[in-house]
Length: 238
Image (cartoon, rainbow, N blue to C red):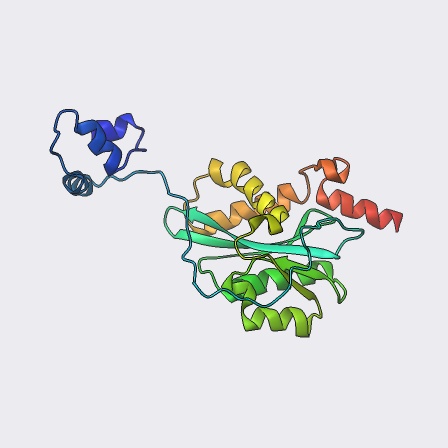
């Protein structure tokens, strides 16, 4: 318990055992784990979530973006992805985001306790309601099962008349812009906040995305304007 408290509750069984082995060379990790369980203590550090990857990867669908993130107008190219948010009470939750490459704006997102095709479909629906884009828009994502599901592909290609684009297998750089956004989200919010539960995380994500990132956070590539300020400046020109 003293070692645990001295580490500010960061040490788990392997590190506690390593410290104790100086005095008790034959101490097993199983014994340390039993004592930690009896004391009701565990490390507060959460390991990075590594989702199970299916061996079957969707092989169809072209990479229309080809790492060309340049645009000439809004609603020309969207990028989409899912990231993982941990909460103390409800465990891992999931954020699906759709971002417009021209505006650098989060045009749609969805947050859920389950990772499913409904998660990405809701994010897409929210983006469409917000932006009302025309047919022909390119929407790019990785080859996760949610984005390659029949329902998602049918919605994008048949109902919305958008063009589907997929990253190459194992190439996160093909979707670098949305990966960058999620990295910023983690650094500026997730890693600095302890989310008590799903509802708490949902509220904080709303405050960050809608209240700060889209409205206030300036971007050098947008002439140091926020995404919404930049979007409004384009409307004035038009």
